[in-house]
Length: 166
Image 1 (cartoon, helix red, strand yellow):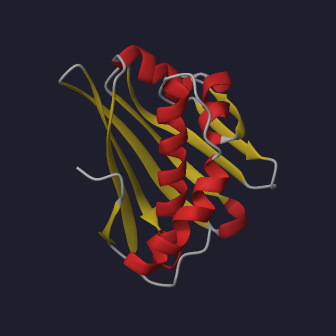
Image 2: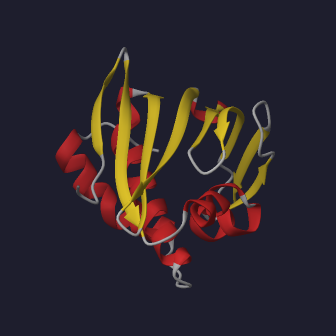
């Protein structure tokens, strides 16, 4: 397992995948993935989430970026999946978080499918920064996900090509 995400073909698009282990319970991690106040700490966005299948997900960043989605799978403490519609970029994709008990914590598998191929480096660096901020938030620390994005983006471009602004 590595902190860096992997990117693979997904039809005409791409999939970004991360595996991260957290010293947390499934309940605690699910709360960090669905509670708007906790999500703001690691996403850096204003969040609205209705924690049920069919529930609405809205993410709004100060930069003006906006994501709208609908929860398609919600199995408490196991799976959270929702659509990811980023109208300004023309992105219609799907985000899935799987929580697996491992050792004395949880292995989180994040898979973002349907990512436009010309945006994979940006999505990879973005999720990497957010997951670093999530790890910090779970232990009471703070990491700026946007700063991490700026630091990580050149490495993702190096690994996966120059395409991929976010």
